[in-house]
Length: 342
Image 1 (spheres, helix red, strand yellow):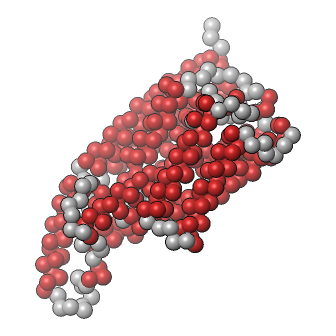
Image 2 (cartoon, one colour; image 1 turned 135 degrees about the horizontal axis):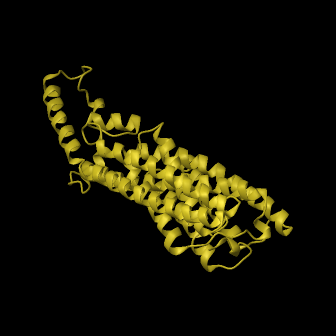
Image 3 (cartoon, rainbow, N blue to C red; image 1 turned 60 degrees about the vertical axis):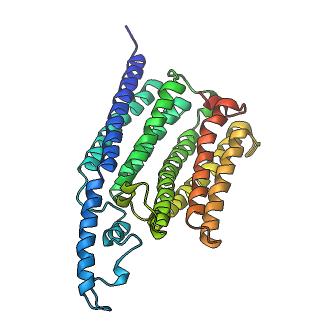
């Protein structure tokens, strides 16, 4: 007769598979929403033509139809989207389905993480499989929480896609049976250090997605200003590059504070486990590299005028360092943190 721990571990794997399926359908819903955005585009263009006709009949200097009411692509709807960080045009039914499926997937995903922890009799953050699955859950939850304040459904395709990549990496690349932790990890600092690191990484994932969209939107706006044809019409339902950059900067600032705490908590834990705060271990070095990159990003944008595409690329470089730290460093570099690999 199988033990209760084996049964819980089996249920955890099934929950993970169900969550992955729900995330896949949610990803398709968000992608379908972007693909069908041409209807919104046509509606905006129709209203634009009507407003242009009205503008031609309104005397110059009057309040309605003045030049300040029109943004770079000529539509007031884009300005409304910037102020609300949301969609233009009619309500997006496919995006609403995507959000609902993401909520369902996150609930099932949470059940998988909890049952994994119950099977292991500890927090499920002891290896790459557990970190990837828990990290993917936190990314999804943070995305859903941000949606309660800002309409960022246009990020759904990218964010849910990244969640799926993390879950596939855990299942295919890092399958690890339930096991006890090595003595160095059996500390309350595991909960403090890793939980904050996961939350910071989730926020960095959101800003990575926003920076990618910022680059695409900046290219579209440049093409429009130069009179060239835009290549990605669905980007019209996404806020302006400036709005994406501003929100990304604010989220990165919060994530940077959390990452700073992660670095400090890791040093304190290292002193308790190994008798020193810093030992130039590969993992420690790359955690510090990530801190330096995002510190440079915040400093350059705030004081040196690094705005636009330069800040977006620096944010992307920072996230690539995060990915490198949690994949390549864990798998191919030996050191005191090797036990947290796979």
